Image 1: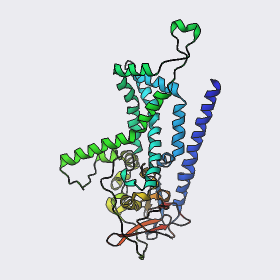
Image 2: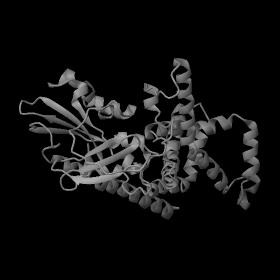
Image 3: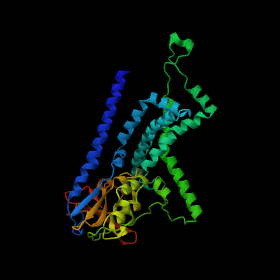
Image 4: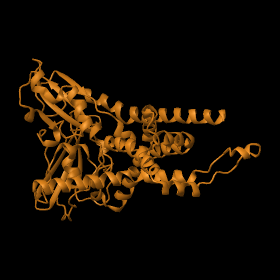
Length: 402
């Protein structure tokens, strides 16, 4: 028993080191590239930058092997899963009930594993429009309540308890205490498979609930079918099916591209995030710039960047991870002039979020280089159904694009 605990300890230490390496090599090391001046080719005279660094959660959760490794860890801790299930079956001690819910929240790794595997399948079958990127925060909260809620609800049904009793008969009863009905071991492989299977289907349940909620919103507000409404709930629950699919795109012809200045779009603002990241950015005063910081422009004109999201909306195949939202990894760069006035807020995204290896390409992507710290992604139209895109990479093959 002590050897098994030592093996589990070393295994979990290895997982922690793995997460640390992913965060460092795939995210935090890239922040160093943002030190280059100027940030844009067309930037005004900037003397100081402030960087609001995002979080690498989306980068970590996009690794399917890491998610599966955590599922293996859950399967290797069945005794603690059983204790947590017993705790959520009672309501006399709410502390134990809460601890049981918290522990069963670990099963969210089953949902993350489903999304990473689903991403591979959708991209291979060119069906990325079937599923929108999921909000990992919503999944974590849903797993915490659903993981223990499933057990609590089943405990209220005597027929279900009788079924479990008949299916999972204890064995390996000690001979010397057989008269006391002392149970030595119990085979719970099947019940664990059923339980984890239900948690693996959690993303589809959240997507279905989101779809029903959006349908109710459209019916109550009498919105047209093709019109999408953005509300607090639609931002909080980002796991929903896309309302329309991408049609066929005609042949691609040559066209000249020029470097454009950063544009002010809705995707540039900090409002284009889920609730958790909006709250984090609000605490960084990004949500109230005009109230606490001396600025030269209005809030709408100040935000730039987010140029990759129009491409993702038109062609989700170009998302490296089309089932898990990657917006939380974006950084915001605040630019100040020599008078210490805030001139610009630029949203930058990792180039690694763009899948440049797509075989079936409705867009042609040209790659150029600039002398700026971050690149720029330009999607242009020459005529109806003819589109082209240019990725202007930053200096020293910058991993960021605005």
